Image 1 (cartoon, rainbow, N blue to C red):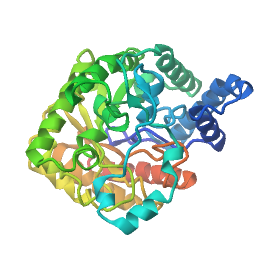
Image 2 (image 1 turned 90 degrees about the horizontal axis):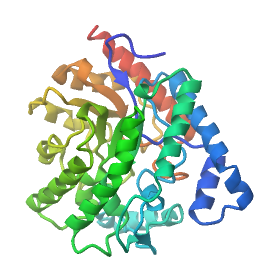
Image 3 (image 1 turned 30 degrees about the horizontal axis):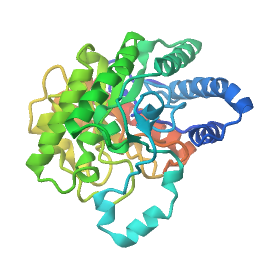
Length: 384
């Protein structure tokens, strides 16, 4: 089942449920516990799982697919194994909204999130040292697409933005945040351009442009925060200067976790900045209870002709399966403003952002994607 001709297309924001064997292998590799025998079979296991996740997306009816981020421990900190300059363990504390509620903070910390992945600090010059890793990702995805009758043009590959890397992997080397961003942007050009050259759409994950407000800089005023966000966008634009905007999409996020989110910066306060970023497609949360109302923001601005919207119409932190009619209603809200040809239905965020730490049951995640597809078909009939 796919979108009707000329209808609203569907996609998602990157991570999809990984098989238990893959999660176990990724965790063992992350903590240096992978035996030589299991290491030898690692690539074959990832290849098999990538093929399976590509096939299931096609069977579900998703139009623009990816590798499910199958071989990555997470959407962001995976870069520590591809870049020079990182070591030790810097760690990250919970966001400011969670810290505002001590009893919830205790509950939040009772789950051992820190064991899932390491977050070293930047302790030396940053450069891209392992181009073979991204080339392996691209080859695995190309092979899986070919085996399932698809081409790279039907798919996207995600990569961490300079700003989100700076959040998870703290700077202990460069003289300023700006200098660190510049180094990360220069290094990540290698990965971004490799994805583009391979024929895929590049998705740049940019939670720093929204969630960074209450994660990294909760004590700044809004004007001060906007200046930081502008720096992050400058770094992103520099790193992608050689890639056509229509071959890119960017994902905004206020944090893919169940929490109060009362400190989230409103979309209205940053949307003008977001429109200065080069990627032509803008992905953003529009299904969860804190941001579902913000579809109306787009009615109050003039979306540039070259831009498209990729609203999340499926919540990625709850096991509720959205009714297709609700999905259709959400999509129609956007399509009525900018036209159905400029709307791509998606999820709020990844359905398995960190390997093994998904809030959504794997089979429910796929059912939610099925509801996304059906909802897009229903919405499309209103514009056919």
